[in-house]
Image (tube, rainbow, N blue to C red; front, side):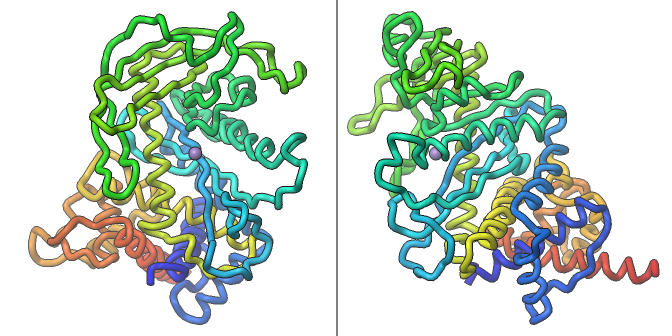
Length: 442
Ligand SMILES: [Mn+2]
């Protein structure tokens, strides 16, 4: 079963790799599926020095290096980790989205390259449990309002972590249509949000009518994601419209909290001639910058990467919802490590057929010689059985993980599960290699 065992090992591997990355030295501790490894993992997950923040900060450091000089899209989104029906004994977890099931929420910020769509890594994440809702809470400062702060915190996190990027654009779905985010998103950071609210405009009238008389600025094709099982998705032709305008501060917000109005660009992508029975695509995007409509749509479309991250976290790779851990603090730590692991699995699957990304996207440079040795040990006699990628490339690492995960060089290209299993084995082998080196030096 690729459930709890995998994740726990991945978390340990992650911890080991992060220790190496953070300190440049090897922390010697036994890994592996034996009793000592169990105790080590348990100790790590219970240790007061190990926190979700420490794991996320270490991952963010590596991501920041990969992002240097690039136009980075920070895609943020929320997903629920739901344990409904699995057990009732998990301690410290609040109700999930349906108000009844036990679960918690993750809200990661994922860095994606604006030009080639590469996943550059995790920038941060908020992980929390929703407090039991009390009657009357909604009117004052309800849990929803508190939770909505996560969008602004995520934007601030991205700006903090990525001073070296050429530029940063925050992208979020309709949940992130929050006045506070537009008002307080750090200066110099781009922001593209899908509009959910038909806001009042400073000039009078409503947002959703603001483009009714505007001429179309051209047409583009947009890939529409599948709506559910059996739907293959489709390609839609959309007409683009845009204009600069000012949205008014919602009445329930105090003057001290946010300015009276804000300048934004409204971009509309509206499908022309949708197929019979299909819901026509209509995206209304709000951008803080003055941006070409086709560019805004192209950047917003990169949100698919964070949806892929959640799939990897749950169904396709790490199966976080199957974990057997019982209490919230250790689950949160595990979730932080698993988010990093999910991003890495996507990077490895992307790189399996080659590509321009360097191995440093996923692995600390001090481990490169060890990686080469592991790769050589996996190669066979025929050309087909040799690692075909340059040693400094992410693809080189992907080949090694695929082989360790059980791929035989011949059949169907390796997917997320194979990569996850391969990485786990690789982390243990790298430790063995580094341990041997250390002992030789002594
Ligand atoms: Mn969402």
